[in-house]
Image 1 (tube, rainbow, N blue to C red):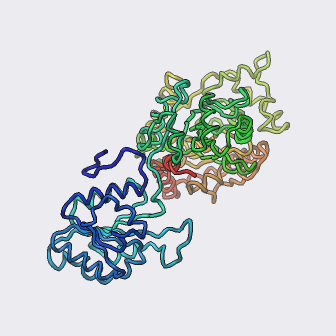
Image 2: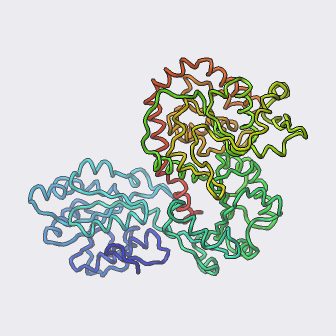
Image 3: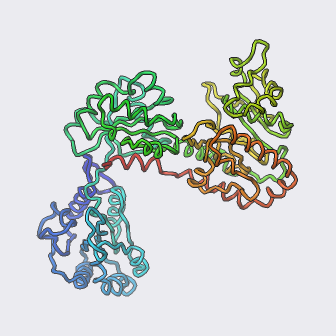
Length: 591
């Protein structure tokens, strides 16, 4: 048994109903506790099935007389009893409103004494059958307005049951505790199965993912493999960390990154699932197709397969081929970055006077990033841009023998005419090895090759420019929308965002977060252009158009302070985003 502040719970994977049963049994151990209600002695409703451990002599069975039952509950409590009184649905409690509102709620005001009453009430189930409008209402807010001296708790999870019943047990007063019979059979523990043969599936990495700073799942258990077949009524999951792209692994190896032993368990146990987790990358647009195909080739039912990555288009890609693979879009990257930003740069001065019009930071080499820098150079805007190019040395493999950069490397982002027009500007970058921003007076990279985000956030180099030209991770591919930390940064640091990304990246970002993109000044119609060459041209045209309005830009920036504050608040609120956490919790009772 596990003790939680006085109440005892089994360490087994209990259901919502089993938790209520243990709570009732624990409460009944106090000689001063009495239980009263309809069908408490003689089972006839869901609540009565949670009273198996209670001696019959502690129960008072009453007929259908809700108001009288509430009056009796108050009378028993006035003698010093702790009374648990049962109303299986809110709709029944309405009939007891006179006693509840005029007497129970006002008792302490009238007598200066407290009584101890716990009113158990249930919200009627909507599924699998609709009981009718008169049996499924939830009147929590209405009763809160009527009963100013009654604490009302809403228990949508097992943790809430434990927390609120513990409080009601320890503190004399009147409580209404709402429960959900439709959750009675929900389990509480996330069962995980590891495979020590791989560092991507072993116990250490699972503990990392479930721990603080990651998905923060406390109610998980690492199970023995034999438990899968022994407990067929519970779900078990094999979590596989995919370092880069799942699609790449499948195409190169013609298999899935799991052991033969785990494949065998998947084939023989429908309650066993595999999760391929790429927590901050987006993978290729065909990942569902190749995973679906490979799973079927092996014989694994696709409904037992989960794919998690950062591509916002995952649900559409799944539906496109009518796959039964389960998908989830990870919010891990946005969550971690927002926490780091807030922790290391909570407050910064609002600066109206900037040294630069544009900002354009580039770490890894991609063609759209090189294309934007080339365009800025070609149109004489680079001097008014706070820019970086940290991986210029990777251009070495993209040069002619004379050292010039091969211009056709930009074929996917520039049309032929623009490639020819910008050749000279492209070669401006041919001898650049590592180009940091003039404001980056610190080591950008960590010793292991990562990026020192925390130092960057604390130093706040973003304060020096009005417009952040955000070169996102993805640009050329269709059916990929990968919202990374690059998109979030200008919204926190009071910059205007011009995001260079895939088709409808901006549209999806607005839908998800509600950011203000300042479209009364900026033309972001390029976001609707699916062709990457045309989209790039529209972006460059917009940069040039805005630059011509440079004088107006300064005034617009000064007048937008409240709007910047709104955007910053959105990023700050991501600190407590629970989407990934809630997804893993939902796996416990996944069907």
